[in-house]
Image (spheres, helix red, strand yellow):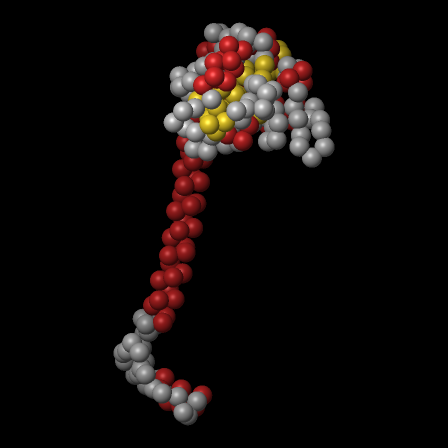
Length: 230
C-alpha cells in the first residue's frame, strides 16, 4: 500500500524547541542534538552541545526522544534521517523533526525508506528559503511511503543490511588499496634512491664521473657501490 508518513506514526510529527538554547558544559548539562549531528545518517555524539538541566526539564515535557525514534533534518542539510539506537536521555533543536513509528512498523524499514532517493526527491521538491533551505513540518507530513507487510519490511531490512556490509567492505578495501599505493610509491622511490630498483651494471660509468662532467668542482661524496651519509 501507499500511505502518508503521519499514518505510520504513534504521535504527531513534531520538531524540537524553537527557543534559543542555554548551553553549558558536558559535566553539568544534558546532550542537545541538532541537524548537524545527523548528517551521516547516524547520530554523531562526538561534537554535540549540552543544555542546562533546567531547560532540559522544560523541553522534555514537550517531546522526549526515545529508542527507535527517527530524527529527520529539516534545516541546513535537509532530508537526512538518523535512528535513535539506545535509551540515553537528550533533547533536540528545531532543526530536527521526530518521527515515532507505530508498533506495526519496523523502525529500521521506515528509517531506510526516509533516507532513500525516493523520499529525498519528495523533500527537495518542497524546500523553501534562499541560502539555507528549510523543510517544514507540513511538507514532511505529505511524504508518501510504500508500505509492505511487516514480515516483508523485516526481510527488506535484512537484505539492505547485507548489501551495506558489502559496500562498506568495498569502501574499506578502496581505502586500504589507496594506502598500499601510497606506500608502494614511497618504497619504489626509496629503492631507486638506494640503487636497488634495477640491476646494477658494473660496466656503467660511475656516477662520480658523471658528476665531474656536470660540475668539475663538485665534491664526490658517493660511488656506484655504496652511498655514504654526509
